[in-house]
Length: 222
Image (tube, rainbow, N blue to C red; front, side, top):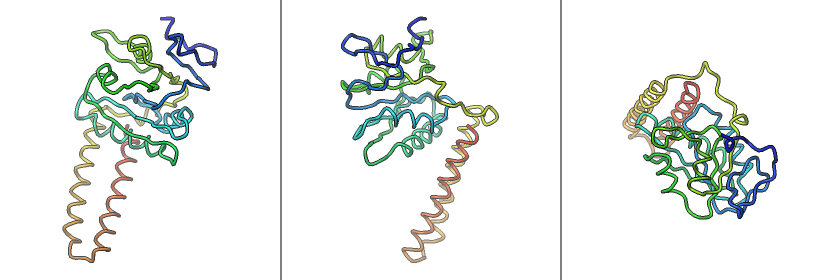
């Protein structure tokens, strides 16, 4: 399909001429909010955050949007969005995360508002009926929404030896989260007779350790 070929020119097309696909645009059109469609792929969250930061202007609103197909995907997607948002948050960029339990076409129609610029990967695919279709072509050509396309080549893939079956990764993460909740409850019970400061410090320390462990385990097994 010729439309899916990335143009060689870096100059962004004119939105007023219905050229809605932007490739490597250095000066994108004015927009009120950058909506990033985060795929459920094995990509580098840090590299994606860097691409978002390069595109987002000062005092810019950035919305990270993801879609879940089943409950097993939820912990993985929550951690991914949290990690990306923590890399982006600054005094000039406001980041919000949104996880929708809809199909991608429904989610985009529900979430989009005039003035948005959508950002997605050039390999991100969605199912329309029984046929796969590239996300950026659907958003720009069907929904008529300005779309900035990020080449997947700019986002390093995770090493193959770190990949695990999706169901196993999510099952392990859910088990760790449940175990962490139990540890916090036990800490609360064992330290409730302590002074307020000691009690709060113990809970905070356990919560920080659990967060670091869960985040590190997530990015190792996924």
